[in-house]
Image 1 (tube, helix red, strand yellow):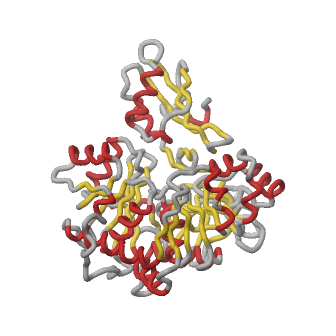
Image 2 (cartoon, helix red, strand yellow; image 1 turned 120 degrees about the horizontal axis):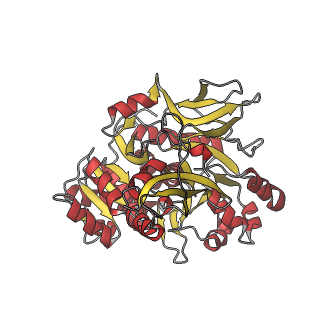
Length: 482
């Protein structure tokens, strides 16, 4: 792996199979990029970024809905040696501004006009482009030095909130990204003949690093969907071999009346949140689909997985992937403690957050914040979370972040955010509100949430209470809610 990076591997794959389809649109239009087109177009995109002054190591913010053009821009930035910073294309203005000011991008690729305007207003001397701009009037564009990054170079900054709610950027190197892709190839027998159904968003490591980067590294192909629509995904099953999803997707597939069609695939993977055991058993018993659960984080990429060949156990995340080690720290009498992992796919730390980085790494081990146990047969099971993280539809929501936004409203005296069990979402974001002087204005709070928070962070329910339960030290006892 010395001297190799994902862009280097991708380029070799495209050169070896120039006519082979790599990325296909799944919305019915069926636009296709083969290896030769990807090599040429991403090279042009890299040249255009260089023309705007981007040099290796500088940040390129990428906030786009999934499309072939947006993917070309992202890959072009990586081939140039720039550091890609993916941001949810539905992020609020304050969320987008925070990330942009934190990383100080040389160029931002944003597909929505309103958000391009925001960045131009919020950042001094901002260069904000639509991804299509990288391919316009650029047939003769070229750049000499492509795919020259080395494994130790930064490649990706993925923002993930900490327990305080302050977003932090996990910095992945070219080496960690390559290690993550190679581990999945070995664990899941990922071969060039595979075709992945990819309806996951690309601003998360699940869709971006496991799905897109894994596809390109394996020399295989993927059907790309802008959003998850069960009928569209199922219509493409016949020409595919794998599907990656989150529990919410599996819930909707189960309700579609067509879930049995997934049995034609060789592998269905679920992650980003626990898959309810009863839903796993329903897929297995009713439709012959043995969903493979795995475990990972923005900071670590995927690190554990149920076996491809062997028992895929509901409620378990299996075993460490090739090259990864896992351990349980400070286990209690029941064997439950904090899950620690180490291996080559871990990020190198948090962007501009040295104290936070040092707090999470212990002699090469990363403290995940999740509680886990290991059975006598070495299967790892996640038992809960040391932090108060809410996982809804595969997205991470931190109560402190939501509370900071809604607590500003003058009608709010106190507020606590928790996740309540949801068959569809895994957990449903719920707000418990104490009024300041009388009843809180719930309609105004819902409007404030819509203005300031990405959709999945907004409470799905507001409950008005007289007081919040607290301990002797004054801390809110979330476990006593509701």
